[in-house]
Image (cartoon, rainbow, N blue to C red; front, side):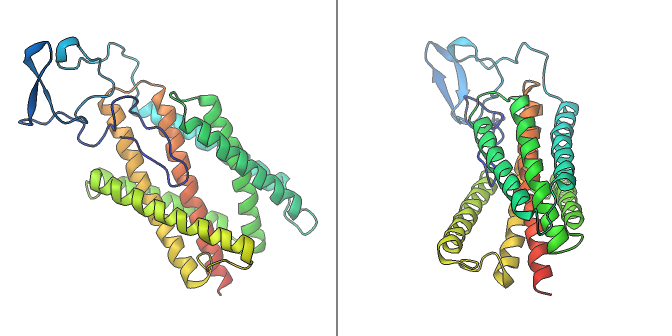
Length: 296
């Protein structure tokens, strides 16, 4: 399955054989067609019913399992995700401590944070379009993203809503745990319909936020009001729900990679995707808490 983040689209575990994850297992009793050169060999007509990591045998013979045993494991995913998030947390803590947001320094600190966010965005796009995961690129992205999160969290916590950063962290952890439990229990079914709905909703959400930003930049104020008041709260909740949906897509992506014997390096892609999604959810929580505190 090629999972996509609400902020950045990225390559999933499948490389050249479509989306791994939706109907990837051959279906018993499915329609079959004769293959050229071997009238007795049959393959399913479903173009998604292929293991993206299997080696294709000649004459349409069934795909063979990869010869390599260096496959991704759940431990690999956990360790690389922990490493990526660890770099992000450390740089966030350092930027919180070293970049003050008092009246004399807030402009400089905010400028550094925005600059780090832009660099992180560029690095994320570069990784998204690379054929292979680059650990150095992913960890560098996490470092710059951490600088941005540290600055913006410090500003919100010290100048808008005391304790907002910790509340946002707890909220993000709760969403992660809730989605994981719901996914493992089978309460969330990730299929084509789910994927299409989430992608359409995310596209509409991003377009609305972009239009609101343009109105805010050129018209002043809060643009169309999507980031403040009752509308702001509603869109904040929608943003968190979208993040939760993308977590489910990420879990499905990891599950498919494990099932089909993805190479070990693919665990870095899982870490990258999960980090992107968790950052999205954290920022939506932080913004929501800011709006609620401002309205008190």
